[in-house]
Length: 303
Ligand SMILES: Nc1nc2c(ncn2[C@@H]2O[C@H](COP(=O)(O)OP(=O)(O)OP(=O)(O)O)[C@@H](O)[C@H]2O)c(=O)[nH]1
Ligand SMILES: [Mg+2]
Image (cartoon, rainbow, N blue to C red; front, side, top):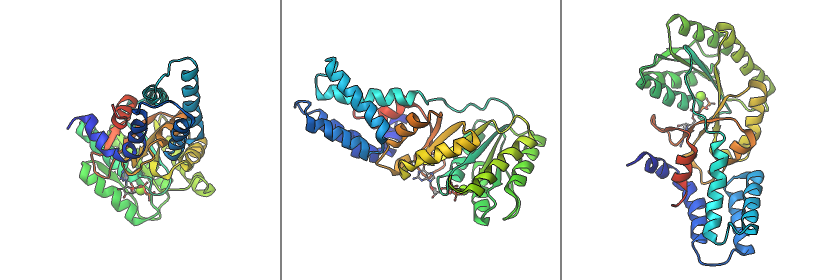
């Protein structure tokens, strides 16, 4: 199975409920009437593209019709695809591990997939012969520390922890200090999930970030926000707030396999303009893909 087929299979929910339906309506040799345009607009909203992108696509279709660039339903389908592609290309900027040690702080709401994503990324980097260390700065629950430790073992990465209830900023500081002394290449700092509306917890994660900088003045080189694609438009507000307090440098959109509303990735791109680094497409260790706009569009659209 090719790389494209493998993502395409994982994104089948979005394909079935969005792109396949557009394709079925668009291949009909029928006029571009109000009913057809309403169908497209509703489908975009239903698929979580959000109001702004839906407007942008509908306007592009109107303009195309006026200029005669669009003469058939098939042309409409192509226009939709192209607007989506160009929107996604603006945020296609893969993560580069530029310096050593390279410290990445992971943040996001509860259950968005931070710990799992760290495990997957640890494995990818160990495979590239990098010395990887995972730091358990989610000290909220003992189970969270254990979960990260299991991933560290599975991926063959180093691991730093303290006991449950310790100050997460202190754990982050010690973890980064230890990584410096052990000559690590990459360090992933896990944090507890928190809602963007929980003021104290947001302050806490800022402290974690500051502690990392205190341990190593060039760090963290990346602050990655892990967003769950299945939660819909809420992801936008979450991301704005996390970005406001932490200067997020990249986004990882998880659970793209679990949603029929894949339009969220386009909404996130348009509304935030923050690079999308990776997409999560399952629970297994190899279910993470570097985000590539063209691959993504080709894997969800019917050719
Ligand atoms: N289907 C699917 N499930 C995922 C993906 N990424 C994570 N998960 C699942 O989502 C659940 C939560 O993942 P965690 O990694 O524990 O999330 P977290 O952000 O660390 O959660 P907290 O530490 O509680 O804030 C787990 O059951 C994961 O297996 C993905 O890309 N696809
Ligand atoms: Mg976690």
